[in-house]
Length: 83
Image (cartoon, rainbow, N blue to C red; front, side, top):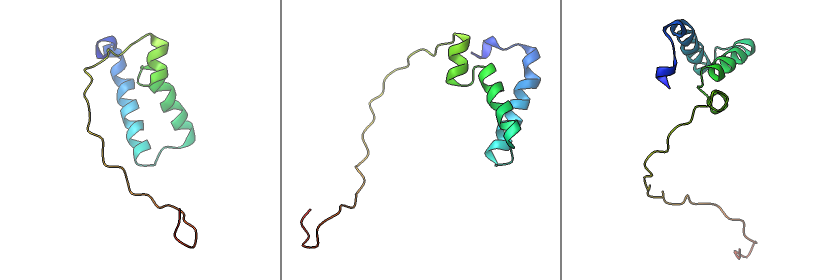
């Protein structure tokens, strides 16, 4: 997808990176949050944006991951200890 961007897009992509950084620090107001979302969509940096632009990510190699041990959970019981 990087090959789809033009040199003229560099300034706007830097602006996206700056706004994304502000969002990560919690310093982005509502108006700029909307602007960031629109820019991310416009550049295909969201699933919606990629779909709108007709970009598809090729399927990668499937790697089997070992499942993590299941977390311990509390369970409600009656007063006699029976579940």
